[in-house]
Image 1 (cartoon, rainbow, N blue to C red):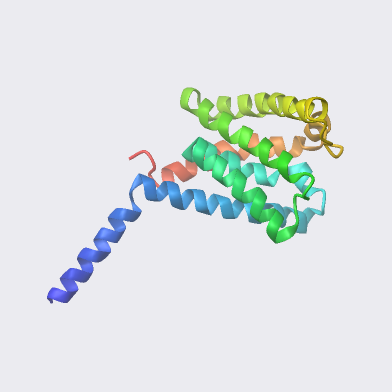
Image 2 (cartoon, rainbow, N blue to C red; image 1 turned 45 degrees about the horizontal axis):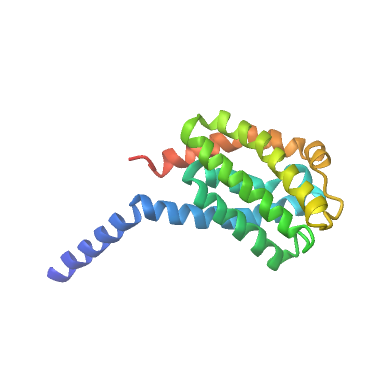
Length: 188
Protein backbone atom coordinates (compact mmCIF):
# COMPACT_ATOMS: atom_id res chain seq x y z
CA UNK A 1 0.00 0.00 0.00
CA UNK A 2 2.82 2.38 0.91
CA UNK A 3 4.63 1.56 -2.35
CA UNK A 4 1.51 2.36 -4.37
CA UNK A 5 1.15 5.68 -2.53
CA UNK A 6 4.79 6.55 -3.32
CA UNK A 7 4.26 5.60 -6.97
CA UNK A 8 1.20 7.86 -7.20
CA UNK A 9 3.18 10.71 -5.63
CA UNK A 10 5.96 10.24 -8.22
CA UNK A 11 3.43 10.22 -11.07
CA UNK A 12 1.78 13.36 -9.73
CA UNK A 13 5.19 15.04 -9.39
CA UNK A 14 6.02 14.15 -13.01
CA UNK A 15 2.67 15.54 -14.17
CA UNK A 16 3.32 18.72 -12.19
CA UNK A 17 6.73 19.11 -13.82
CA UNK A 18 5.39 18.43 -17.33
CA UNK A 19 2.57 20.91 -16.86
CA UNK A 20 4.86 23.83 -16.03
CA UNK A 21 5.19 26.64 -18.52
CA UNK A 22 8.91 25.92 -18.94
CA UNK A 23 8.29 22.25 -19.79
CA UNK A 24 5.58 23.22 -22.30
CA UNK A 25 7.98 25.73 -23.84
CA UNK A 26 10.77 23.15 -24.16
CA UNK A 27 8.52 20.38 -25.50
CA UNK A 28 6.79 22.77 -27.92
CA UNK A 29 10.11 24.05 -29.23
CA UNK A 30 11.43 20.52 -29.74
CA UNK A 31 8.22 19.41 -31.47
CA UNK A 32 8.19 22.45 -33.77
CA UNK A 33 11.87 21.87 -34.58
CA UNK A 34 10.95 18.38 -35.72
CA UNK A 35 8.06 19.75 -37.75
CA UNK A 36 10.42 22.33 -39.26
CA UNK A 37 12.60 19.46 -40.48
CA UNK A 38 9.80 17.11 -41.59
CA UNK A 39 7.39 19.56 -43.23
CA UNK A 40 9.71 20.65 -46.06
CA UNK A 41 10.47 17.02 -46.82
CA UNK A 42 6.76 16.20 -46.98
CA UNK A 43 6.10 19.14 -49.30
CA UNK A 44 8.99 18.08 -51.55
CA UNK A 45 7.71 14.51 -51.72
CA UNK A 46 4.16 15.61 -52.55
CA UNK A 47 4.76 18.66 -54.76
CA UNK A 48 8.30 18.24 -56.12
CA UNK A 49 11.66 19.91 -55.67
CA UNK A 50 10.35 23.48 -56.03
CA UNK A 51 7.75 23.04 -53.27
CA UNK A 52 9.99 24.65 -50.65
CA UNK A 53 10.29 27.96 -52.47
CA UNK A 54 6.57 27.94 -53.34
CA UNK A 55 4.97 26.88 -50.05
CA UNK A 56 7.70 27.96 -47.58
CA UNK A 57 7.09 25.00 -45.24
CA UNK A 58 10.08 25.63 -43.00
CA UNK A 59 8.80 29.15 -42.35
CA UNK A 60 5.56 27.72 -40.96
CA UNK A 61 7.20 25.94 -38.01
CA UNK A 62 9.39 28.96 -37.22
CA UNK A 63 6.46 31.37 -37.32
CA UNK A 64 4.29 29.14 -35.14
CA UNK A 65 7.13 28.80 -32.60
CA UNK A 66 7.75 32.56 -32.51
CA UNK A 67 4.04 33.34 -32.24
CA UNK A 68 3.37 30.74 -29.57
CA UNK A 69 6.56 30.68 -27.49
CA UNK A 70 8.50 33.81 -28.48
CA UNK A 71 11.77 34.97 -30.01
CA UNK A 72 14.11 32.40 -28.47
CA UNK A 73 11.92 29.42 -29.38
CA UNK A 74 11.40 30.69 -32.92
CA UNK A 75 15.15 31.22 -33.31
CA UNK A 76 15.91 27.71 -32.03
CA UNK A 77 13.37 26.23 -34.43
CA UNK A 78 14.90 28.27 -37.27
CA UNK A 79 18.43 27.09 -36.51
CA UNK A 80 17.62 23.45 -35.88
CA UNK A 81 15.27 23.23 -38.86
CA UNK A 82 17.77 24.63 -41.33
CA UNK A 83 20.85 22.83 -40.01
CA UNK A 84 19.28 19.42 -39.39
CA UNK A 85 17.30 19.57 -42.61
CA UNK A 86 20.56 20.15 -44.46
CA UNK A 87 22.35 17.36 -42.58
CA UNK A 88 19.52 14.87 -43.15
CA UNK A 89 18.35 15.79 -46.65
CA UNK A 90 20.90 18.15 -48.19
CA UNK A 91 18.26 20.90 -48.34
CA UNK A 92 18.63 23.79 -48.35
CA UNK A 93 21.83 23.39 -50.32
CA UNK A 94 25.04 24.57 -48.66
CA UNK A 95 25.13 27.81 -50.69
CA UNK A 96 21.57 28.71 -49.64
CA UNK A 97 21.89 27.52 -46.03
CA UNK A 98 23.34 30.69 -44.42
CA UNK A 99 20.82 32.92 -46.19
CA UNK A 100 17.92 30.67 -45.18
CA UNK A 101 19.15 30.65 -41.59
CA UNK A 102 19.42 34.43 -41.49
CA UNK A 103 16.00 34.85 -43.12
CA UNK A 104 14.24 32.55 -40.66
CA UNK A 105 15.93 34.07 -37.63
CA UNK A 106 14.86 37.53 -38.82
CA UNK A 107 11.25 36.31 -38.95
CA UNK A 108 11.51 34.64 -35.54
CA UNK A 109 12.86 37.78 -33.90
CA UNK A 110 10.40 40.15 -35.54
CA UNK A 111 7.33 37.99 -34.90
CA UNK A 112 8.30 37.29 -31.30
CA UNK A 113 8.74 41.02 -30.67
CA UNK A 114 5.67 42.22 -32.61
CA UNK A 115 3.46 39.65 -30.90
CA UNK A 116 4.20 41.30 -27.54
CA UNK A 117 2.59 44.53 -28.77
CA UNK A 118 0.01 43.53 -31.40
CA UNK A 119 -2.42 40.73 -32.11
CA UNK A 120 -1.28 37.65 -33.99
CA UNK A 121 -2.51 38.75 -37.43
CA UNK A 122 -1.04 42.25 -37.30
CA UNK A 123 2.20 40.80 -35.95
CA UNK A 124 2.40 38.22 -38.73
CA UNK A 125 1.66 40.74 -41.50
CA UNK A 126 4.23 43.19 -40.11
CA UNK A 127 6.78 40.36 -39.87
CA UNK A 128 6.17 39.19 -43.44
CA UNK A 129 6.62 42.71 -44.80
CA UNK A 130 9.41 44.02 -42.58
CA UNK A 131 11.20 40.66 -42.60
CA UNK A 132 11.53 40.79 -46.35
CA UNK A 133 12.73 44.40 -46.23
CA UNK A 134 15.43 43.49 -43.70
CA UNK A 135 16.32 40.36 -45.65
CA UNK A 136 16.71 42.53 -48.77
CA UNK A 137 19.20 44.60 -46.80
CA UNK A 138 21.08 41.45 -45.83
CA UNK A 139 21.31 40.37 -49.48
CA UNK A 140 22.35 43.87 -50.53
CA UNK A 141 25.09 43.91 -47.89
CA UNK A 142 26.21 40.38 -48.79
CA UNK A 143 26.66 41.38 -52.43
CA UNK A 144 27.80 44.98 -52.26
CA UNK A 145 29.60 45.28 -48.94
CA UNK A 146 31.06 41.83 -48.36
CA UNK A 147 31.31 40.69 -51.99
CA UNK A 148 29.53 37.39 -51.36
CA UNK A 149 27.63 35.62 -54.06
CA UNK A 150 23.93 35.29 -53.42
CA UNK A 151 23.67 32.34 -55.80
CA UNK A 152 20.81 33.90 -57.73
CA UNK A 153 18.75 34.74 -54.65
CA UNK A 154 16.31 37.58 -55.11
CA UNK A 155 13.79 38.84 -52.59
CA UNK A 156 11.40 40.00 -55.32
CA UNK A 157 11.53 36.60 -57.05
CA UNK A 158 11.15 34.75 -53.74
CA UNK A 159 8.06 36.83 -52.92
CA UNK A 160 6.50 36.13 -56.34
CA UNK A 161 7.23 32.42 -56.17
CA UNK A 162 6.34 32.18 -52.47
CA UNK A 163 2.92 33.85 -52.65
CA UNK A 164 1.11 30.53 -52.03
CA UNK A 165 3.28 30.00 -48.95
CA UNK A 166 2.63 33.52 -47.70
CA UNK A 167 -1.10 32.90 -48.14
CA UNK A 168 -0.80 29.64 -46.17
CA UNK A 169 1.07 31.48 -43.42
CA UNK A 170 -1.59 34.17 -43.15
CA UNK A 171 -4.43 31.64 -43.16
CA UNK A 172 -3.06 28.98 -40.84
CA UNK A 173 -0.19 30.17 -38.63
CA UNK A 174 -2.24 32.40 -36.27
CA UNK A 175 -4.98 29.77 -36.03
CA UNK A 176 -2.53 26.95 -35.30
CA UNK A 177 -0.69 29.08 -32.72
CA UNK A 178 -3.98 29.89 -30.99
CA UNK A 179 -5.02 26.21 -30.97
CA UNK A 180 -1.65 25.21 -29.48
CA UNK A 181 -1.85 27.89 -26.79
CA UNK A 182 -5.36 26.84 -25.87
CA UNK A 183 -4.59 23.11 -26.07
CA UNK A 184 -1.57 23.23 -23.80
CA UNK A 185 -3.08 25.95 -21.61
CA UNK A 186 0.04 28.05 -22.05
CA UNK A 187 -1.30 31.15 -20.31
CA UNK A 188 -2.67 29.52 -17.18
